[in-house]
Amino acid sequence: MSDPKKIKAKEFFTIEIDHQSNNLTLYVNGEIRNKMHTLKAELLFDKMLKIAKQKFLKMRERIEQ
Image (cartoon, rainbow, N blue to C red):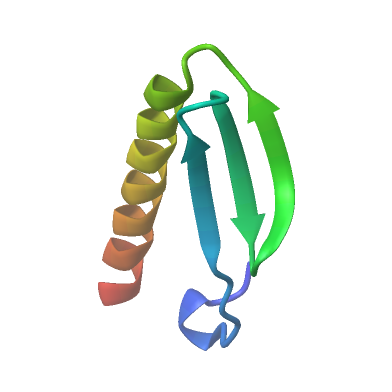
């Protein structure tokens, strides 16, 4: 496994919620990677943000050690 400190790439992730149509869209570097329709869009959106935050904090802890 490569050392996270040596990785120089950047990717921009965006999770977009459309309340009117109950769609979630995942963009990576401005390109649509996944789009889904669900009746619980807001709940799923909050869950995705929580997962992303946990993963980010976990990676940050590893890098700072």
